[in-house]
Image 1 (cartoon, rainbow, N blue to C red):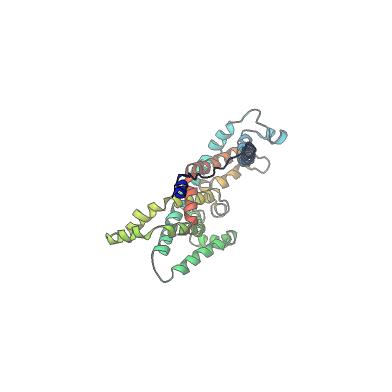
Image 2 (cartoon, rainbow, N blue to C red):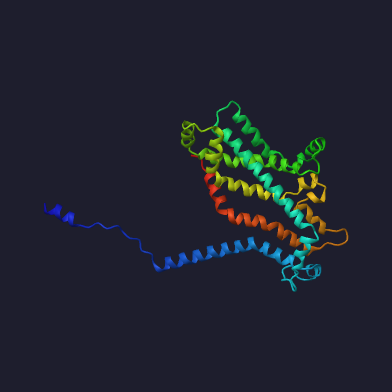
Length: 299
């Protein structure tokens, strides 16, 4: 009895790990080195944008005579006014905005409908249709230029914005569907089954239940499609010839002449063209990471 009583009085405490001063110092040095390396990487990522802004404030004399890494001696802010008023950049900017917006909306809605039909409906050829869409990822863009040009020429869509919008939508659909698939597989079916029990139609289920739940991954697909459509050059240069329908990527050629090139104006145009994508990414960056993380794991 006395032995058992003595055992009960013994207090067993967990062993606490003690960090010596040397371990703490090494840990701080390690974190310091890590932050230093990450700072260098961040600077290397941001520096091209900073260099482009300085480049856009120079004239041709500074571009060719001064060091490429030097600051502009007399910043030429009038370069921005020149490209916006005299270079038709305002028109090209507007064309880029509405063509990109229409293409992105059409692509995301179409891809969402296709993904909903493949993952939520049981029909005979759903796997075959999915495979046909995935094959589209393997088709090189440049191999379709001549067939598409002949096709649009036959139906009188050359030099028409609809040719560019349809092309952007078709080429972005496979990748958008692939991104949406991973997220749709993680959505619980119980919510949709409950809606069916309440008499909800398929259209209402998609637009009022499923589509709102996929907003994180839709943000990811929106920014990916936006970047591609905004920066695309080959299709817009092939299918569009009228100056009034050109976008920023093609309109920048106006400042490249046979005998002279205004490099400061080109730099200002590039800065203007970067701003919308940069702003969109800053506002949607959290949604992009959330959408990618949610769609990466099935289950």
